[in-house]
Image (cartoon, rainbow, N blue to C red; front, top):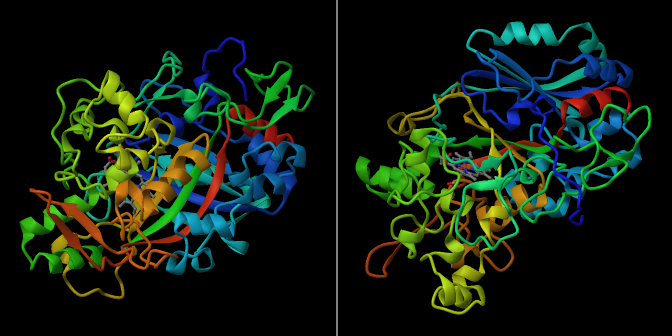
Length: 502
Ligand code: HEM
């Protein structure tokens, strides 16, 4: 949509679901229930009364929170009009398991949706209700929410439990460090050329109804003003229309099973059992040490938008300027694929140098050309682990049939699933052509199935000093997809609107 002359209105945090602004880190217990609508009228009635937690900052902060998000099938089952549904993005409407999309996301072979535990055919949820509570408070919260109307309205498809691993994901690395900083006040001018890495993203990259990094509004359902839409906010860019998407976002959920034993056994085999070398190789796969420190030097010069937690500033204050050859942090490392930072214009080129690079010339032009600017492909991560941890030493021991399954309920928020999550997953994580590499995809997430034209996808290349490279071959598949879906996490006003029948 084109730029409109309308003024920007202030954000009403009371209308935004809290998960967009907070990770609810102090609420150590969380559980997500996947539901199907069995009685639409009862479902709408539950929605009208549901106490969905908003993004308003409170002192003291609340001890519990509840969030709700819908799949396209769920909105349809609740009776939302087809004309309203049609305004949502094509990828949300088609869903995560559409065949060509599965290929692009790497959901083939043992990741194929036909093998999933949920998110496919009859296992497709209509909505997810997410419960968060301080330790000991989860059961009471669930009971207070899931009363009689709930039982009339919904069929429970599956409960997804989570585990509190103190910020460490099951492979043993600190997680949840790097996040983009959302420009809530909409102060930043995105129209200027911005080739330097900044951690700030426009509000419209996360919330619908606001300008994004292109200074445009992402498409979303806009409806006429009538009695049913009266409670919705107006669209900033379309006078006379009400905005169903405003203050809402898309929530991508993927159930990622982690084979921690195979991860550490493979690594120990590669280094002949040497503990220090094993940690080094595992850190090269991730792109950070187990403690979360980056593999490249922390920069003294401030990077706009890093923070606000001082510990996070230190651990996130870096770009790949100092590591143009990937000797410290391999190009294929998970965090370098997930956020290449300034790889477009590394070396801090200015003036003529930048022009030369922008035109595709210069010594690094080949690799620069393979990237587009990272600010268009950022996601807000809100995932939680499940099952527990397993130390590298324990991972060497033989598995027992009673071992719990370990993994990550990966969750990310973004206004444009195709340009943000899917681009990241496809062009950066799964691609065997990322950054001029061949024969490899993400060392943690990669699906090792051969691809047309790429018979080898299970390598990992780590450049070492003097232009030499160390190749690790035959990486097993460490992460398997067990479920997933695209949800819409609406504003509180839109929750009521859907409750009223849309
Ligand atoms: C089981 C699967 C996964 C594991 C074990 C994992 C682990 C990690 C770890 C340890 C970090 C570094 C700590 C941090 O900055 O938070 C990280 C960063 C990150 N991961 Fe993952 N991750 C997984 C799946 C994914 C997926 C599916 C995506 C997106 C498609 C993703 C995107 C990111 C991003 C964007 C970052 C931050 C990079 C940065 O800004 O430096 N991860 N992940």
